[in-house]
Image (cartoon, rainbow, N blue to C red; front, top):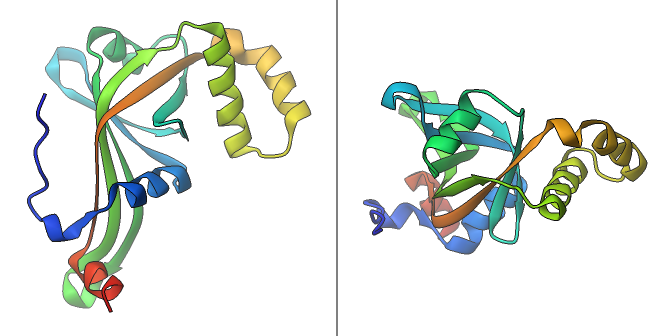
Length: 164
């Protein structure tokens, strides 16, 4: 599939910078094709690893049904959103990823992703994480988002600042 090019190319962030935003941010919004063909967008915590995003989920629900019905998805992260009321704008930096999302079936990958997520949000507490995984991994789905297209964008005012 051909993805659209960004219309305002001057505001496009380099791929490496977009990836760094994904590494730093702690939550974003996953967009799926939901019930009745309506878009379903859900805020989620995530972890970036080896060019993929991992999410955790309950075993059932709207998100899981949507993933099973259609594997195409997008994920949006807003790193910065500074309102500039006197100029009627915001100074923003954001990233959108397009790709395919799947339920991870492989137990080794499920455990790896769960550990990555746990360490991301509670670093340095391996013993507690191990107990949590022993208690809850069986009741948790792990979702893997394979990125096919990634774009980052920043407000034109930030572009101007970074070039001075």
